Amino acid sequence: MADVFAASLTPFSSPTGGVGHSWNPQHLRRLEAQGADGVVPCGTTGEGPSLGLAERMAVIDTVLAHRGRLRVIAGTGCASLPETIAATRYALERGAEAALVIPPYYFKNLDDAGLLIFYRALCDALPADGKIMLYHIPPVSQIPIPTGVIDGLMESHAAQVMGLKDSGGDSEHTAMLIRRYPQMKIYTGGTPVFARALADGAAGGIFALANAFPAALKAVAAAHSAGSDPAPAQAHVAALNDLLKNYGAIPALKALLPHLAGLPHSSPRAPLLPLADGGAAVWQVVKPLLG
Image 1 (tube, rainbow, N blue to C red):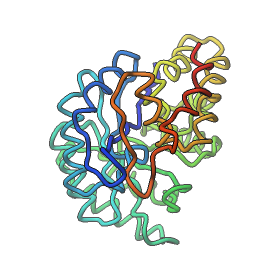
Image 2: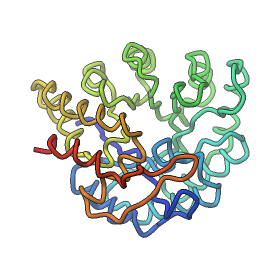
Image 3: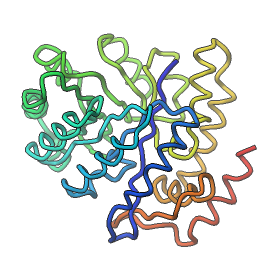
Image 4: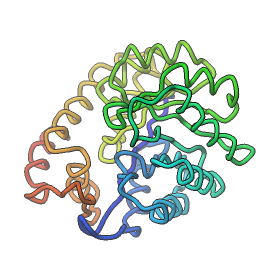
């Protein structure tokens, strides 16, 4: 069956406060119990760019220590090459299956050659058996990962590149990657197109929504695996996803988890802010969809 990973949240005590590490074990056990295959800490949903390097390492430590049966692919991409190398080596040496690496996102309109040099230098610095996943999310990073860069990595470092997460929002692009790179695991980051990606041959998905509704996303994968119609399960997760977009995914998910899982309240970190009403409105609109 295809994988469902939660792009796991990082709990903060307040918009300017520290990480609440004690929150994670309960969250991870719920994800495991509801069928999630793994977690991706410190990515976009995990507010990785809002974490200092030491904080990111500490979050990775906490998740690895309490992962249970969950697989861990750690978000380690930073704007600088030295910090990306440091975070990636740290995660891999401590037992993460792979590292999810966004392109360096400060300078725009990059030449393929510069981006390829960045990723090759990272791969050269990995432990002998270390793996990365490329993170294509141009709506956020504004830096795509073109096929020319992927082709170059396949020529020089195919053994180090496990796969790619495509969060570009274009199903045809995901399908192209699946056809072009059969040696790689291609994951979608698009909840509304999960069933389509599976039909095209994706290895699975990595989703913000899985923090709150891992079982609903796993139902899409189960229907696909069984050869039954995934449309009803897909429509359900798409409806949930659409509701959360109206509130901002990260603040909304953090507001929902106390209701869904009995977790303590947690905050996003500035510049993101918690929902003004503490999440009362988003809970009222989501509750009727829970059955």
